[in-house]
Image 1 (cartoon, rainbow, N blue to C red):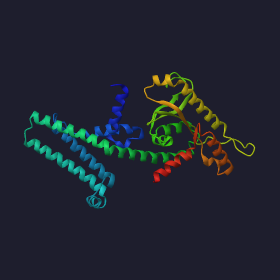
Image 2: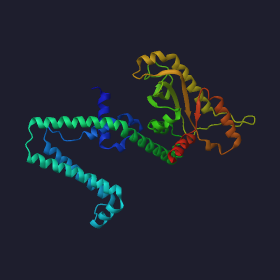
Image 3: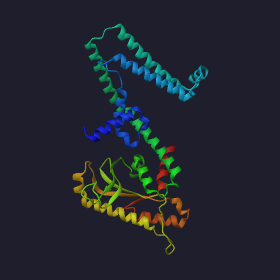
Image 4: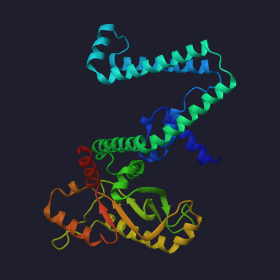
Length: 342
């Protein structure tokens, strides 16, 4: 097992302990995490009684956590009974735990009353493994897509919260926004309008391989999941100026924005020149069918609602749209705010 494979297995085990830790970048490991979680049954060919007792302890601990979460550290019987009557989710959580505990106790009683030889234990182990494999197949079909959808929705809500709480304090912190968006696969995926796969952060477009030192590099390179076409992405900050000083009754793009547009176009051209050398040395399959380029920069509200400035920005944005798509931070997050309300 390679180091990368070992890290993936360990991460899947971590997710199996608590799937709520999953983010959109973990979507491909959800199946493995669920398989690990559901395979935590006792081994009929091992010490069955000890394993079953561990499960009983785990059920008891989980039910106690559920009660404490709902009623605090010192719940009384009256409040507990009232909660059973008024909270269907709480009642179901306790009932499923009781069902599992009763089933384990019945199994322990059967084992105590009947002798199980090696053939019976082997047969039981084969049954458990077969049902585990069947469950994995069924989960992959129905449950995993639902979980992925839930993670995506939670990620969007978290992203919107970060924008609302941090866009002023971090408006000039480019590193913060690069880190934030690198962890938000859903945002970048929706931006490019397809299934995005991270190829690499700090993607070197002009060196001999994608991880080479020096030369031009893009903040992010993503791969379209359908045609493997590369998308280059540059991220500035919400505080970056969109327009420069007035010039003959209009407003040119700011020096920083103009420079970023020129930068990403040069990155695209350099990548197309060095594609074959890069593709040969890269572990990922990607193509350069006229790579798309995006720049996330600035905030439309910084234009203060000035119609002349808004017009100047929009005219110039559309003029370069064939080469570079410019998206402001507030436009980007507004898409997700709207989406999350649906």
